[in-house]
Image (cartoon, rainbow over all chains, first blue to last red; front, side):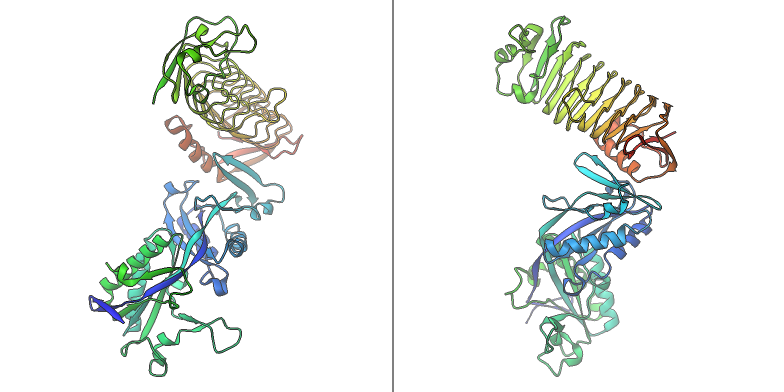
Length: 302
Length: 269
């Protein structure tokens, strides 16, 4: 089904199928960029897939000191869940366990929206009655006394139900090390797009899944059609020279952001991929009947 | 943006209530109708046209030329637009205002911005007693918004104030932050004697206090993040008029311990 070839890389005439998600953004600051990153990394850890991790989380971008409410270095993180109801407990646990606890941290809303969660609804009670609030303009900041001073957490954070989860690119190659390097470069390009995250380790998934399993109780199982070691044994999607396949999964606060991210990733793969052994780029879908968002690769070509 | 000008004809001999002279109340009125608006209660209240020469057309901005401590309720209930006053104003300027900006070239009287919920008041002179405070019948004093006083402030500023920020270049008089339940009083010059009697919550920031109440507990030096948030916030609201950013560390006096004691005096020097 190769529709076109760019720079020696086949681009399949297919599309990524993605789903509506609930997404939110937070701004995490600390005394140094190092500690803001530590806090954000831990807070978004184990946030790969809603199926097993409860929420899909990642760092959108680092923020300069001019962009944060307290003038300190910061990081914007995004979290995605199936629904507001499923995302809220993840927010509460992750902020309570990973942000409140991190030295020098503060936590602010990172998404302006009419729909809000009570960001401080749980964490402020850690103050045991000593917490106080300071409302400045339209924003209310809670100050919770902790052992290194005060943990500041904004009262509310916005969320959107127009988020999109599951934008993706499947990258096929004939050299596993080169494939990984090229895919890393694509993830780096996607990282420059605002309002998106790539929630898997380093932004890359090696265990793409299909819906269902031969085993009872497993909702998903290995995507055998893209497993190079099975390419003679199953109805394969791999090319004869495929040694490995990697996937980039993208979640975004808007459908446009996901499309922009896929476009940026695709462009980078086309630019650097051939020399690294990338042979093909495809995308994962379920026939188009499950997810409302379809991103056709041919529409995203540079 | 059209401007409506009120030129004070002569110094008034009686207090005038200028609460009718805000852009939203004057929109759509003719100059003749505006001239007939009463500036006070009762059948003998003077009309706007008796006290002022009125020119221009109703719009976003009202300019009051001249000033007098008998001009009460200037910008009271303001919900948008700008009021510029060329001189002094009396009591209750900006009372209950929700949005917009009032700029007063002279001094302001008592109860400036009492029960205000938003907007900005900029006084180039000094302000009287009970700035942002309550008068009998009010549950709280100031409830939001920002006041900047270039001069000094009278007694009991922020009485039962709940939210908002008051910044003064000069000193606050005695008992600033009296019975305050929230919000921020910030002086670049210092507080007079005994600030914060029965202070529940809220923040008083300044370089010095003339006399500290015995019911404030010294918590020593602290470096809370909220100082940076406050500095950045006020810089955004006041722009070049904003006070110098707060230092990284301050000395905290917690009180008033005669009540719930969750308020604080933060000493910047």
